[in-house]
Image (tube, rainbow, N blue to C red; front, side, top):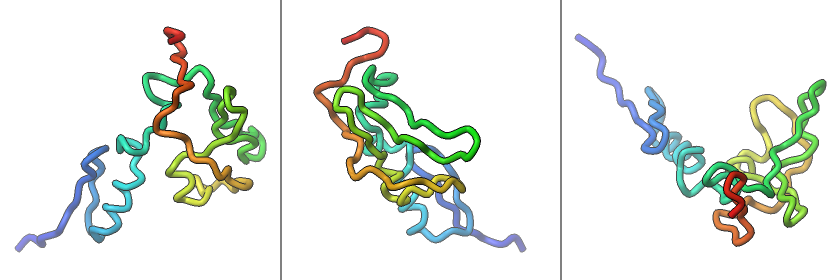
Length: 115
């Protein structure tokens, strides 16, 4: 007789989870990159012209600078990065910026249209 298993599916990215507790899936959904609550203004409609992606040292793999806003001249961290306390893959990161990337920004400047 086939064994019955419980499987869950992320409502944002469609990832499937088998033999995992429901609370683990809920945590995934909370920080899922496809969750609209986690998409900062910098990444909407392409990318903001003020946004500069993280710089990573090619030799060491350590992040030299996090997400950067040229308008505000400040480093920022994504919600997911703050939740993981800087552990991304197996890279060792330096201190994480306290500022979270905003969900809405009045300084947003579209890279393509300039508006």
